[in-house]
Length: 237
Ligand code: ATP
Picture (cartoon, rainbow, N blue to C red):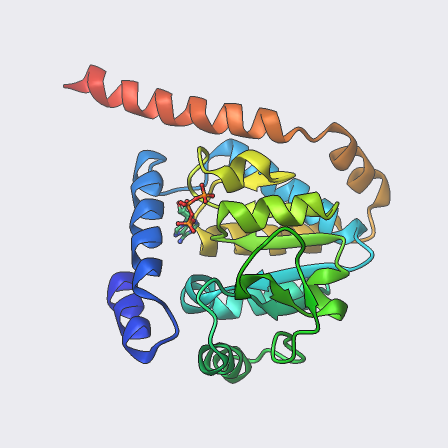
């Protein structure tokens, strides 16, 4: 069903054909993790909620694949924090931007940014650098689902806390992210939103989580989970 939906979204022009290739790569990693949220991802999702609650200017950034896969979940997360939302895409045309923003609005998004970019993410060439000053540019903590490595690196270079949702723990995005979450987008967003509700107002716990969080440990434990799952398959044969 998800594949059919994405193929439909390609026909409508919201998702690009290369978005399907990214999705396939994600599915392969999801398969290796048993198509469930593994423990290190859950811990990273809790840390993501803590960083978002502590942020001054939190942001949920969305692109074609994430809009197609989890519009309501992303809107729910942005409302829960509350965080601003901005559409930021790799293959940018004004028509596609308008389509994605209009689609998010049809799903309940309010005040979604991206229509009138007035800033650029430094160190990125091409139109994918375009963003708004009040949104992505000035944000301090930013959620980037299904992001490409160049933009993740550029956002880190701007000094932001970058929370990535990327099933591949070996991608450049996961390697550079402040909080790399290797989980499928709908599960990740639902878990972060739940943790936002749980942690809200508990400042001591938020501080404790942020103080003890290690992105390196998340990636190491994620890769270890994949290795363990692979070896257990081998032993059963
Ligand atoms: P990088 O540039 O970071 O090294 P890449 O070349 O794979 O990685 P993209 O294809 O733009 O860059 O990244 C998309 C990433 O999103 C892929 O690594 C893929 O694993 C991940 N992904 C795809 N679909 C999903 C999904 N439904 N949920 C979470 N992650 C996903």
